[in-house]
Amino acid sequence: LTGDIDNIMNAHNLMMVALTSRMQHEQNNTDEFLAKKNLTRLDIDPNRVEVRWIMDFCAQALRHIVIGLGGRLDGMVMESGFAIAVSSEIMAILAVAKDLKDLRERMGKIIVAYSKTGKPVTTDDLDVGGAMTAWMVKALNPNLLQTVEGQPVFVHAGPFANIAIGQSSIIADRIGLKLGDYHVTESGFGADIGFEKFWNLKCRFSGLTPNCSVIVATVRALKMHGGGPEVVPGRPLAKEYTEKNVGLVEQGCGNLIAHIETVKKAGINPVVCINSFYTDTDEEIAVIKKQAEAAGARCAVSRHWQYGGEGAQELCQAVIEACDDPVDFKFLYEDSTPLKKRIELLATEVYGADGASFSDEALKKIEMIDKDPELSKLGTCMVKTHLSLSHDPTLKGRPKGFTFPVRDVLIYQGAGFCVPLGGTIKLMPGTASDPAYRRIDVDVETGQVKGLF
Image (cartoon, rainbow, N blue to C red):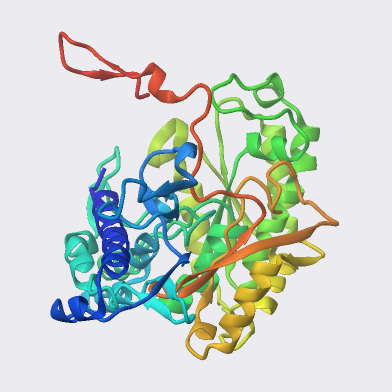
């Protein structure tokens, strides 16, 4: 839509080209030859390459690949893989960069691999940070679009909150605050991941403090969290979701209350927006409103799906009132909190787990990070499913009695945070058995694309 993802893919894959070609040339040539090219041997360990190629398709067959099979002029033979484009560290950098100078510094700090002696190798070590920044110069500027009703909006950065930071850009926020009386910024998914990263990462990076947080809830989602039938994309909804069922809604409100409590832990005023659809009943909406208000949130019914902006007047008024209330903003953890303790706090205080467990690989990375004076200052950006408060997408409602598992920790030094990987979530999604492309075609008479909606 904006071209930002294309620029990110080009910058990221240029980094991969720089890395793999450097490894090939060091393998095939002497130190004297490298010196003539003004290159110092980095002695990169092929078993400790930290980055993958990216593409903007869901391609599970490319998660694990072997490259360099052609011969000595075709690269070094090693395991590699692809991730989805928006999971790139560069997308996260776009979201948190404050200006061009900051962007350039961050692009040069990306850790791509480690040498055989354990020394980190960065994009600036590969002399590619500048060229990567050149790809991103235009992408640094927020994209001005408009809604269907003509209101101006910035669309800038697009990292998913389940596998990345999940925030629109700090630059867009700063411009928006100068141009309007109220600035609304979006965080991906729920309070357990999108809001949590807004709270403990984006606000820390930007120095900005929000006046309120809007939690969007639907009758259908709460029915699912109340024990409703499984929802499968592409299949018709079960009748439980289109007919009145107050009991399911009431049982699912525990999930909503968990999100409200998370926002309140940040000292921010929560507003629950009941995003109403034509299948909702007054009785179902009343249950949500009662539970939300009892949990300490303002609650407004928004009918913008049916009436557009006019249908959101009640929500607007609730947000204005919430913004007038005092805010006692506080982070969940201090900068000095050790990484393992941060993960345990997120697991218990936000996800509702009894605690966290760690693989041997994760513990090794955590120990390395805590011992490094620079890496220990990095923020914490958890990767976990958006389909549950827990690590398990099948656990709905407000799960209890579980332990949150961490299998690995990635280091995004350029973006400024460490990335613990929770559960089994993948950085490259898969294409389903009934993909949308099966319904897309072109009318050869008019040239119009059909089947997109």
